[in-house]
Image (cartoon, rainbow, N blue to C red):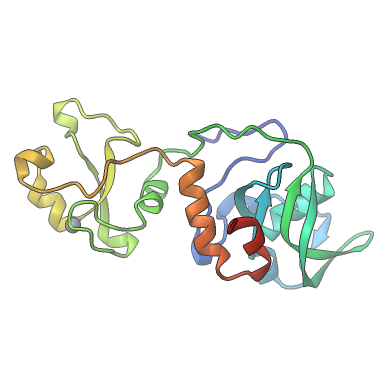
Length: 209
Ligand SMILES: [Zn+2]
């Protein structure tokens, strides 16, 4: 599943815990920059393509790696600094890749987390929003009937609806699918970026155009 791009930037789920790009970025920062405060390093940074098109959200820690490697430049910074061995750097809020990166249409790993993210933690049958722990994944066309584990056949589903549906199609179970499931595309990502972007004034001009 871990599909790394040549230069090391991989499109990441845009929202993890507290709206921060999750996991592995944390372990990525070489000894180059020492966090002044750990929370600063986890803050979300908007990543723009060379064309200023928003393509991703990452953590400050990873954004600094991209700046230090010279593959990106800071477009917006916030008031705090982080100190590397050689110098102090302003903490980026928006960075831009220096060379254009082609973003494949379907770039997200198929995972429970990403499906719940795509479906905004909303049961796709009863349309209610649940905490992650109260949702499961449902195969719209049941696996027993040849339904595949794909973006187009997996949806977020609450346990009640999952039981009600059982091993049937929505039509057979007499329940309505809220919307046709789709791959997690750049469009989906951008909607989520806008949600996160509401919190950061400096992101707005890149996201609301
Ligand atoms: Zn439900």
